[in-house]
Amino acid sequence: MAARTDTMTDVNELWLRYQAERDPAVRDRLIVHYAPLVKYVASRVGGGLPQNVEQADLVSYGMFGLIDAIDKFEVDRGFKFETYAIARIKGAILDELRSMDWVPRSVRAKARTVEKAYGKLEGKLGRAPRDDEVAAELGQSEDQFQQTLSQISVVGLAALDEILVLSGDRGEAVTLGDTIADAGHGPVGAFEVTELKQLLAGAINRMPEREKVVLTLYYYENLTLAEIGRVLGVTESRVCQIHTKAVLQLRSRLIALEREPA
Image 1 (cartoon, rainbow, N blue to C red):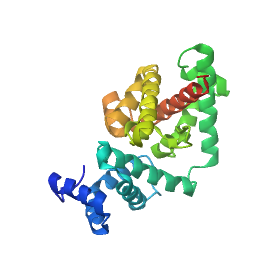
Image 2 (cartoon, rainbow, N blue to C red; image 1 turned 120 degrees about the vertical axis):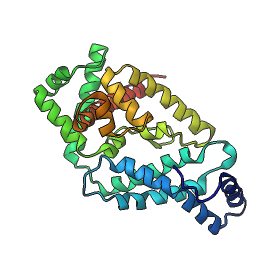
Image 3 (spheres, rainbow, N blue to C red; image 1 turned 45 degrees about the vertical axis):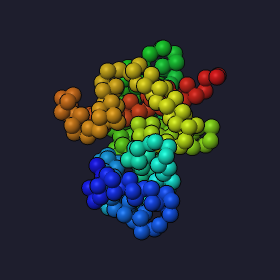
Image 4 (cartoon, helix red, strand yellow; image 1 turned 90 degrees about the vertical axis):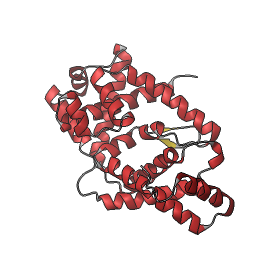
């Protein structure tokens, strides 16, 4: 993923020099070496965004995340830099999108309403509710419910990942993507992310098979929506609907787990 502007030995030496000297020239070489990571993350985030969001802008936002990652990375902790940087880069992009408040309030409200319906029904039924059951809870027909999912999904996958935000004891925001890319905030942070990964794994395993497959292929296998559609034999827009439904179910489950007494 990273450009081969330096050999691995060269990069290791650059890290050692930068950690010891904090030389801006050394940092610049590290930025150039890892710049392709920013384009990679920007393309992943931008893949589900509205067309008016420019890819070049996402790359620009992500560069701040890369620089922050380089400045804060600690080589001796044993974490892989690429994994650490991906979370920082994505976080910088989402922070900027969040500050622009580009997701309409009406869409946020619909997402919260659907999420609450999932939580209420799962608590009552003891299983993942079917689409017709969620539609009835919302006072909608099944077709109207599918339209609601489409309206939520059209804001983009980045916004949906942002919707899945849980605040830890230290007030930090954690998205689904962050748990896949271990941010490596020291032993306590690593433990918290590991714990959240376990909660996510349990929640995903209880989901209907199609939702489970979509989440696994998108977040763990890095397939695009179009590629997932080919695997499942459905359209890209249908995959986006399934992803939307799965993320909202996950959020309702994780929030319910957070509220359970320790």
